[in-house]
Length: 93
Length: 153
Image 1: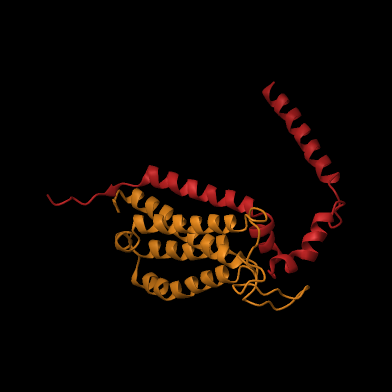
Image 2 (image 1 turned 180 degrees about the vertical axis):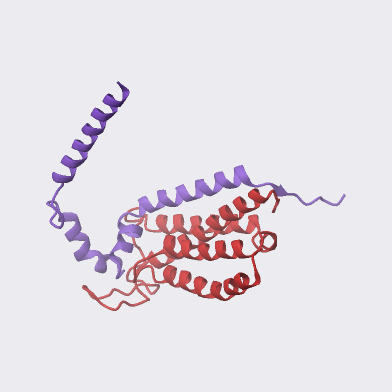
């Protein structure tokens, strides 16, 4: 019984994945390109950066990068809180 | 601590790894890469040294307080630069056109000029400092914890 149920679930999953693969949007010509065209045309004038990816990451989507930095900060804080055992110097009386 | 061959090769190789990581950080506004990626390259060199040598030799030079201060400094510089353009909008690139990193390159593909990009190079430096210090602290804490040693404050 369990194998039959698993087989049916596997077939449903395979059908879902294959249909998703076949129905995906064709590669190379996305329909809404207004923002891409705007960034590609204006990035060098507005941010002065030759690497458009860097201008998107640090300027147009800078708030997103701030969240990324916060995630790194939180991860480091958690690891140091959990794993460190600090040797405290004995203070001279 | 590994054998003498590994230690010698690691000693010679760390210079090139550090230079490449700093290059990726400094040219983040001209070539692919940036603060996160270059910092990860530098930290990979630190991991190589940590594998080749024993973690006892690192406790004296990589202190926890110094690393946390470096990471907090990077985060502060990043946030202050983000607040700097608040007159227009949050994270507005207020350094374009100013004498600091203010040149504007011609539109289209070109070789690139280092003195461009507004605050993007400064942000790359801040994020690189943050990633180097933070990941080094994590790696050192895990290595010392695995060996049951204590961390120098």
